[in-house]
Image (cartoon, rainbow, N blue to C red; front, side, top):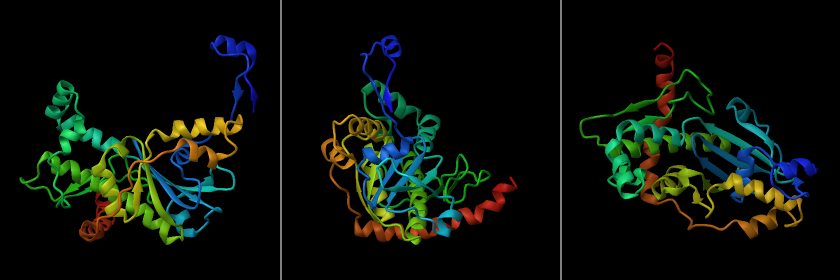
Length: 290
């Protein structure tokens, strides 16, 4: 775009020659920073909200995507497009649970330097929980965009402990992710790999759930704050540090071990997912009248 005016550069304590480079939508930058630079690759960013970005060779204008409120727009990578899904809750739901119900774990984490979420989930069952969580604590995101929808936890008994409820929250968020991935797939969008970024990418349990429930290979980059890296890559390409985005990704993005779906848990979660698909339609009218 040009260079920063010298007087502005001086006021910021910078050199006189500062390049001004156009960036992009934070999630598009995160897609770039997580290596989503060709069709078939997708990113799931799990922070306060949970967002999916899938790379497309051309704009996907399928009616199912339009009816499912899926945004399709230009990628920051030339000649590519992105389809975006959104869940407003994401990691915010787990943080709410931690802050409201897990006082001991928070205090123990402060005392020992451990991660509070690790303490909460350390006793989580290996198998699927018997609970179903509808994670619409801030209304629903795509595909419904229903501001009247509310969160729900079904199946509670006195046998439910803190770790089980926490894992059920992760399952519910991941079932909601699967709803959106299934919508994309039904419209012919290929998803061969899911690159996980954001705070949620630090949880191996959550990454494995994504692989098992969504039935896709999952991989997290070493740098999980991918939006910042993507913006830096754009600056590097614009200033000639890299020839193009692909070269920049090859030089800048490295990976943790890939996580594959585990066949036994894929089968177990498939039945739970079919039940989950019934939750929103069954509860929607009741919640509007509450």
